[in-house]
Length: 206
Image (tube, rainbow, N blue to C red):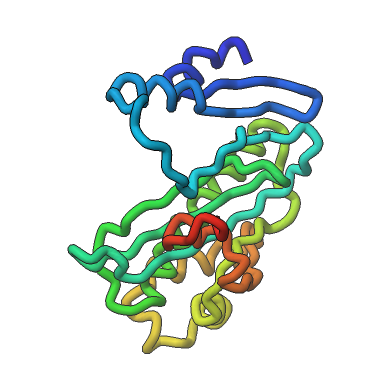
């Protein structure tokens, strides 16, 4: 890890190792920011931020799993949707992102497919990376989605009236489904981890 120290420092990430794996934390970086902007005497308030260090487990499996979701037209100023995804390598969270979509989606399926297509592109990229590292993915990566319509459209492309505005994203996801790069198991909204990047939650729920 020594060769990566400059990168971790630039990202404000502290790295500690143990028999359990590597722990990543930003406590020192967060404290430096608070001191720099003069908020050390500010009243403390509860937030939904995770307080523990992030663990990259040494005993984790090498199966890639992804959760993808969206919040349709949630921006009150321009009504653009927000996409979000979480990606796990076994039990270890290795990639995550929340991003506002660049155009307004007229229907929920369009916003969902943009989120799924973005997550699929990340999955394919990680397939290549893991293969280069000697950890090829032998099974399709599960892309968990809580939208039945999106899953059905991917499996059955004949829904023309519902897909004419999302053909590129739809065919991109379907191509990788057919090539067995991904699978599309359904997950309920209550268990959809990517919801935390697309919707607000109470602290206890978070």
